[in-house]
Image (tube, rainbow, N blue to C red; front, side):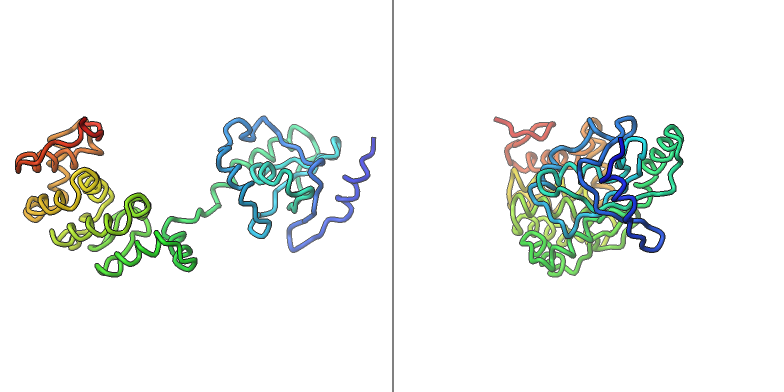
Length: 280
């Protein structure tokens, strides 16, 4: 049976450069479960998209016409399709009109596009998000930048060898400030700078910051003050190596455990176990 709405959409495609665009009713949309991620979608993320839906920042869906079914198969944008349910009755789409007419060949064509789309999508980096949050005045981002400016530091833009004074992980820094406030993060950075670790390329790396944060959480500022001598007398790479040598089976937490042993040798009580949990 002829679908008048489908034919109307196809007859009124808006050609813009090399793309054909259309506003398509939801009921004409379909999805191929053979290659789409129907069961593995991040439902929490989709719910957040729905709850905070903003039509202005939603990209158009990428669809392929299926004339024998009078539908448009979603190749890219299924998450947006679900998130907009109950909000939009029609969705802006880019329509691929060059797909093969044979259903099997067309499915191969669609799956090929689906697998290639992420290869050319540049994700927003944490540092780029940080710069945007500064413009918006987001409190945690502002607090982080204040610490960076106060100690004349920079934030790493990517992985690899870094210049002295470079904070290795923006994400960890942001999480510390969000959890414990600016004072906590500033105490950790101040300790590193007093030890001269800001003069080394790996002195402010993620592992050192996270392990000092563990010390701060259990011993507070006094703990950071007491580990400062051992930091001053040991290069960052050597200190990390000593931690791993002492606790080879707890690599991620090895430095914090090593520094805790040092605090215990100074008379401080042991506060956390090898799993990082508080000792009751």
